[in-house]
Image 1 (cartoon, rainbow, N blue to C red):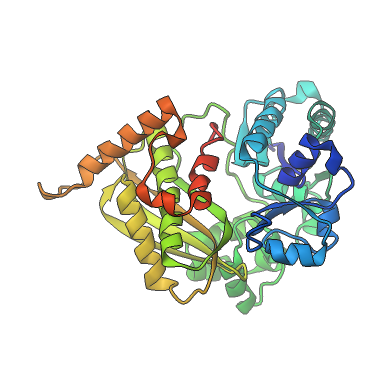
Image 2 (spheres, one colour):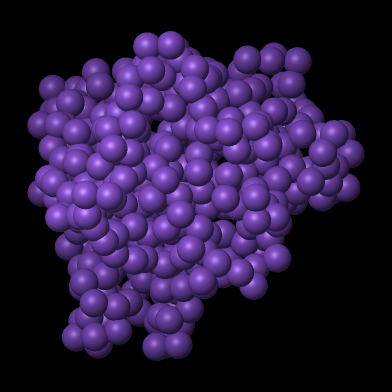
Length: 403
């Protein structure tokens, strides 16, 4: 039986802003786009701002209508990454199995950390240290697998520890809405609702064979996870194992409505994806998928094969744009875009001598080397000049050196 923690920093961006600016204490604080633009999007808020209805996804204009006194902070990703790194160093004092899920969330496997106490004691020690040494609060879920640990960290906020065990998980987890389980997005939730699956308990008791027929391998994963059978290991801090996929997505400072902005968004994301592939020494990908979130917070996904397989910023960008306009051109506004590639192979398939894919792959490597030596802004694509705030997404995504 494993002992897994899921640590989730509370209102992370907004909490960092309040920590860096003591005068914000007691005020409603949100992080988002420019107040001058007024069509920027809120990406984080503290509890006081949330009490007015200011949540992730609302526009700056809407936030100011809900609470005229709310303080809107421009995102400071350098600060957030510095704080995140400090917290991870505390995690590393208790185990070398620390898997980063996002800038403010990590899984820890403390199965072999009994010298520091029980899993609950370790979770509480970590909470107290993060609060005392850094000034931030975290919620921690403690369980015997990653799925239930993540659910646990969401149940009590802020600054709390929740334990989900083999004996109590049916009472705690099974009563929750099915979309509270990691891996159940909007489209999956709607399909499950049509099958009469509304809670995690409904999912656990549903026919495994029908789920596999409806969702393939994902169906089997959903069934296993809802029944406490998630056996996925927690990665090591220095884990050099090849990742199964590499991706990046981001919520932009404004809703993207024009084609040039959509294309620019995919450009900067594709650059980030290729840079990470080069970092992990991944040669070529065979598949590419995109994720799109519209202004109503509906999430859509599409995938295609890359023929030939490649590691190329331009091809990833153009493929993503084509997928978008082939499937989602009806959307009136886009809040988030993402690209994920996977299904690795070592070399390009046989191509024509006139094909330019291979030279471009080499060019991407050169660009990465230049940026490593002279900084992210040392070299950039011409279309990034069209909207520097969208282009800045690429810089922000590269501040976290731990990927």
